[in-house]
Length: 225
Length: 306
Image (cartoon, one colour):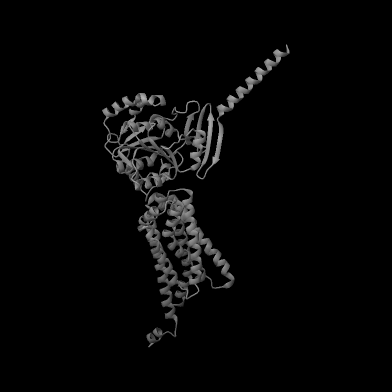
């Protein structure tokens, strides 16, 4: 029993790294598709990328702040999984309502610089803030030893930024050639939701094992009788 | 005696100077170069032929050329082939050109149709400046250049319900294709700008796989169209119209009527009219080719595949 429990715990950290990798992958994949999504309404000039990158950097910075804050209260794998599920849901409007949003902004604002900035804000701010929360929250779940906190954070940045690099190249070299933009967004969304559910069920499994192993627990006691 | 030697010397020196000047000209002299927001812009001159180039190390990138002593004579075959549009609409009054280059097309069209309104749309303000300074690009109240992305100009023009008799899409070059100017949605927006007799002429460079996708997309939006091709190079002109294409006898008749008007510009319209092949009779791509849409438009990647 205890062995099995240790086994579960041993898998917890690799899973957190995998989730951080995937979130890095999705962030850059979505950012890259942002250029595609905005082009029909705002063109493909250099300032379109200016808008997109500004919005992503800005929302990631807020996300880091919010994720760090959130991790101070009852941090758990359960809540970590919830962040992923929220992120997966928050990127769905990029696929489903971007046309209407961009059309309204296109009609309201003549200058494509501010038009594209506002459109990027409307489409990408919320999901990217949520995705940004993942890094600091991962650090909170991974660090157990103060002396190793820097090493843990370093490895986490390594994994998630590697995910970002792969998300960029795979999306721009291959995915756009194979699938429609909305399909790729849907895949990112479902991947995030599935990973979130995985983290939550992982939490539940290790929780129930914990209570099974705990001799003072009521359940254990009644089973003995 | 001294005089003779001096004059001989002068003759030799001046001769040497002239020949060296000629030889540098033959090598192609860069008379202007700048790096704009979008590209490197080069203006080169070689024995009276002045060319605009967007990249040094590529043979495909000559955008626009002009004979310095005879600016209205068209140099490139593809610009001449664009005139096949007149066989669909012989009297364009409102003309939209997307992709300015040196502005030579706009200039020549102004010579032929002095009353026509010509709107040039060019994404790069630096190209407009170079066209003005080095290619005698002519502007007045009827002939304007707008520095804007072609897609946005078209979208805004459609909202304002503007109409054009002739729309020339010339924003592509051999090195890079603006992918948002090849999609079904874009072509539908372009179609909505066409007047009753309006014609779209797209100068494109698609090879291999992209050729099929592009053709299928034009056909889905406009129905059958004309391909105008030279045997020797990769670019083609797609001629499309919102109405049914004119019959061969009407084309021949119009070519005859336009012949004199166009010959001063080095355009042999009869010869060009013979190069027009309707896709109704010759469809040279697989019928099941997928379309390019705003959701799926990897045009540059598709153009790499052979």
